[in-house]
Picture 1: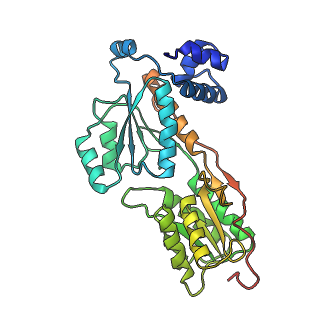
Picture 2: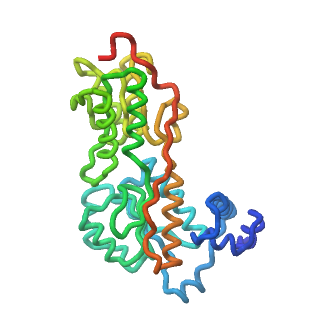
Picture 3: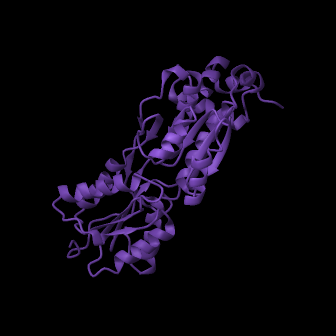
Length: 339
């Protein structure tokens, strides 16, 4: 049986007009109520009728989403949350997975998305030419990575501040030889690794610790890469007593490498991650939590609001809150292992 907007209103205990405003990203609805309405609409399988609106507005009722790695946890979580908001508002998603340089070049050369979508959510960081190509579509644009840029609605976090909190925790425990497992910014133009590395370096410098490039290893933002990077750090003549991994997936790889080398965590080596991956609590990982799904929902909501109010212009950048979560993978270093 078809679910109507009245059904959603009755299930949430609000009026149909409130449901409509919430699903379309309009103001006048609290964020708590909006999230509740979106969740109920998704559970009931409600989708807005598009036929009459499409004829009147000329819209496609399709949102384009470009993503570098659809199979990665972060991007998949953002995409899933955003898609639920779009679907509840009556929009389909047209997905482009640009995981290789060839696919990325082909997409931005041909722009197959032109005239097929009403807005674009970019989960990759475009270079200046790519950003100009997206702006040429003349549709609302939003992103959850890379911070503010002209023409885009940006929803993100303070990557640098998050890294600072992680490394400062290790310094406060007494660690002086602190390694970092990161990911390269090329070829996808990611600023996240650069911002998190700067936070790492800032805390070391402020604490009177001389940064050592030998203590940095590339983990490629994967579990396998984190394991490989941790193995490299353990091979050093003076390995670190603690490690900051720029993502929880790399931290999990580091934990696997430490276990394989019969080293105890946190007694022998402390590990801090970043993200609060859904499995982080399972492995007891100390980490910096970011609201990944909430970023997807907020970006989707802001795109819908721009479609309803095209003359308002892109909203200001939105910085979502982060928090440090202390679990079981960090402790003071053993006496004599601080250096």
